[in-house]
Picture 1 (cartoon, rainbow, N blue to C red):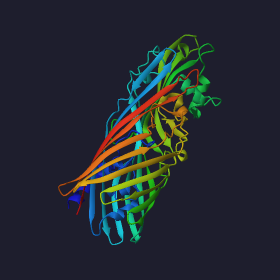
Picture 2 (cartoon, rainbow, N blue to C red; picture 1 turned 60 degrees about the vertical axis):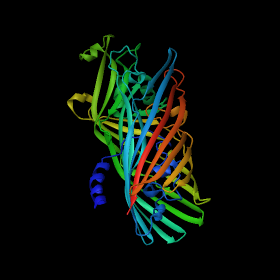
Picture 3 (cartoon, rainbow, N blue to C red; picture 1 turned 90 degrees about the vertical axis):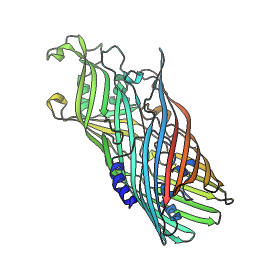
Picture 4 (cartoon, rainbow, N blue to C red; picture 1 turned 45 degrees about the horizontal axis):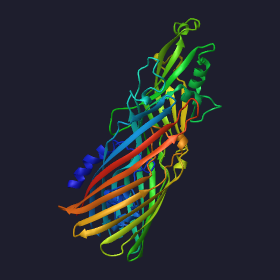
Length: 494
């Protein structure tokens, strides 16, 4: 009865969306479930409870015959992110003010005969940070324009509601699979200097990204830098679609994915497991509550409908409209692992996981369509297609850990999670600092009341990456990221 009531409450709450997450293994969390996380994220070949729904659905078969399991967990992530710009006048550092994120998850499963099955909700991963308006990122368009500085912020979140089954073909070999309902959300408040935006709009440049469409063509007809027959000069461009919710992004999309896995008891003390996670099929992330703002120096004659006078005033041109983030997907993932029990007290687990980021992170693409309203003037109905080059590389993650049964009802655990930063230095962005490579974990599980309480602390070690800029108008920028996370999980069987 309690479980049915809990599901009635938790499913609507959790379907609102996962809390946005800072990145660990790229955009992916280093592990799911306190047990597997404490072993470095290794999870393919042993009993890691209802985290099997996210990891390898075939390991659901470890549920005992006729038994049900229920798991509830809470994870806190504590990122420390900063970005330093290196200019001729000195270095300026901005620290992200997003430093704590909390996310619940739950899972339920049951074993009947050769079949085990379960459902649950987990956060998949994400990335993001926020820089104050008074930081150097708040006003990359120089301080002499009179424009108010603006917050720069990103929050990407991906979550899954999962239904999974496992079938025991024989006592040594099991297969499993899941169908996942996937949702994604994104908030973005991103400013660009004139140099950055004009690089994107110039088809002969486009080192960092691209911008095209009818809106860009119209702006190009108007644009002239100072010194010529000046109509206007761009000081900045600012994309804004964001809300105040801790659970949903202003833009959102929904879709599906699937998993297949196996578990093989190769020897009495050795098990081997593997899983394939499909690429997601998520709709474009969309909101009709977006805006794009440009800070311009415009000829005062044109401002009043007259002829150019050669005298300029700074104005802001806001446009309201719709944003679509196009084809944002989670990549295909393969994993293979083993678990070895040298004696009754010890278990050692090792996984290798491959995330195919190159399939889905070549570019971050979005389309802005200006509303047909009087306030948008001649820009009403026009479009801008914009993209930031990402060119992420495929990522191999090694997860290893050991568990020791210290005494009856108490298990101690430790693990490592090692990988390479998938983002080429040239494309590291202060708003998307997914650069961490090394994690160390300590955890424990002990019997408490009718169930088991599992705890884990994760230390993600500091990484620094410098984007070189273009040597003239865009200076080098160094991103720094380290993190301390913890998770608490309670599970019981009945």
